[in-house]
Length: 137
Image 1 (cartoon, helix red, strand yellow):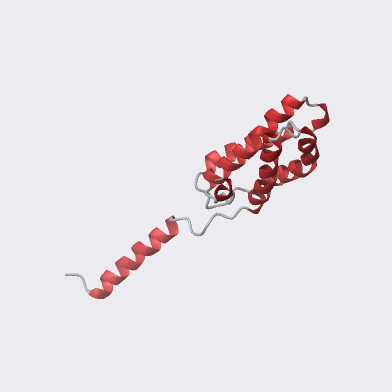
Image 2 (cartoon, rainbow, N blue to C red):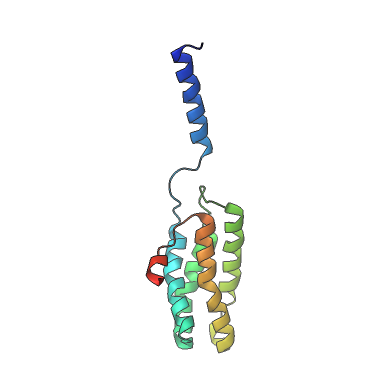
């Protein structure tokens, strides 16, 4: 029978090993949280077919999306691969808004309709809670 001190040491190593392998703490990604608020506005404008409002939001939306695209994915993201892919998709989508004044209303609506769903997926894949969910129901 192993001594109590050997058992304790073995258990301590197991616990330390498991702790080192696990991702700790909640996911924090300020750039994504900031963009979520803007994406929420974009969704409302899209639902109301407010094309002037959409065009007016572009100067706020694009820099926020660029900050997110340039920011690193949190080390403790739930699914970093899918998160990186969605981050790239969002960058491509918002890049197409570069000259929103030249887009037709239908083109603008189509692009804006994709923003909030991608942000929601980014939050889900990265493990960041989506705070607006409760207010939608």
